[in-house]
Image (cartoon, rainbow, N blue to C red; front, side, top):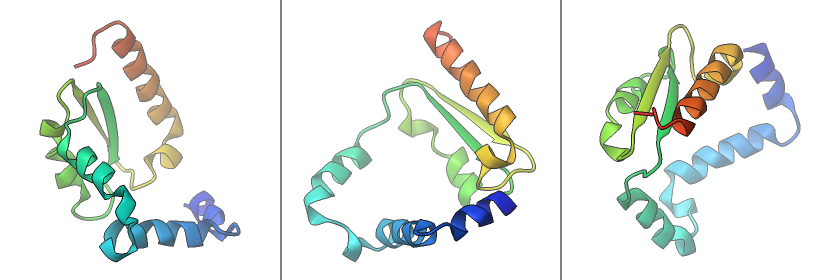
Length: 114
């Protein structure tokens, strides 16, 4: 977590992170010109094989949403929950995340992705 805290102390990082959440969760901050694109993205299933990695110690409510997203992926969804990790799985367990990503791409290239 110290690396994450150090990152947030860098100039502009905290402002950018807060702006992301302000714009993501407050419709008044969204650009209306992008609404047709957002509607299209929300209405379309994901058509490529997908790997989703999640920590079991992320904020409350996120894991159930992660577990319930299978229907959005029509060409395969591989879900990985890494025990003992939170929101920044790639920072907390970089070797494991990298290994999983490489394995996923190797299996996708060989047509074995499910």
